[in-house]
Length: 366
Image (cartoon, rainbow, N blue to C red; front, side, top):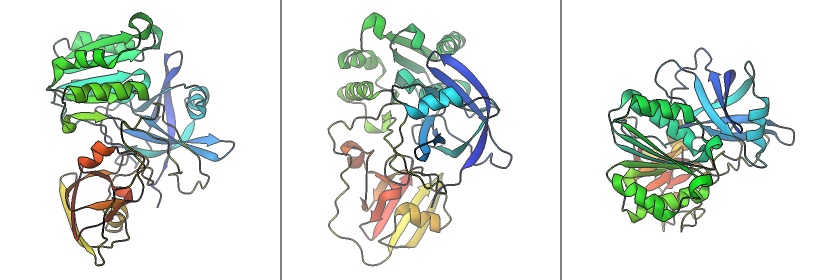
């Protein structure tokens, strides 16, 4: 089953840097509820392709869900990045493109929390959404470490300067320029983050930056529940169901490396129940209870059959939009290209790939 897609009209295009554009969309009348989103989530676009008909691409929202502003993604060109170059070259005001509703779990549990944001390059996109929203509605302090190649490549430079001036007691922005300081090292990031070990940390950027930043946070013993990283891997299928062509998709942020884990390895489980399983799933503050989860049906499929609007995007175990946390019991994932060993040890599973293993399963969506 494919998620319903919508034709969105481009209402604005802003040149942020020489190689980055912010694209804003209007939401069609009647689709406002489907496009409600949380800061740090992403949109999936159906980028036209001469070879495959469509290339599904995920781009983080840089806008804030507060106020009446439009949905905005920020896209940076990448070398040989077909979709990113197409978006920057072709999308203009008045154009339309097919889009899936917002998804993703890279979002603060509380806007009042103190936030340590570590961003590299275009990884600023979801971080900017979080920053804008937390400053407008939250009460916590925000520290942003933002690494870039040089001064000309700093996306949102003017706005970050303005926000820092408007919120001097709450927002601290530290720019790290490779042209001046060289590439940041794990030791340097650890030294910087050591002053903020009580904060909730969010990491987003190219794979090498992600790896060293997360390693630095681990060295500082940031607990797993306060350490978040945006993990995008290539979508192996096409979530736009009626567009049957399949294409390997990319995200503008390079694929996150898997630390020490083999992320493709499914969770082993010795036995599979022969009878229907009792399921309890908490979603958006509501607890759903069922006694008839069939062993050969995934968690997502079962919830959908019961009319529960559980989150998902790719349906193939290649993003984290459907992630749940196990509270009781166990499931077996058919496929997993995004969770690492630490995620799995922490009880996180992909709902679109999870089959029941125990007679009782309790989960909660983030």
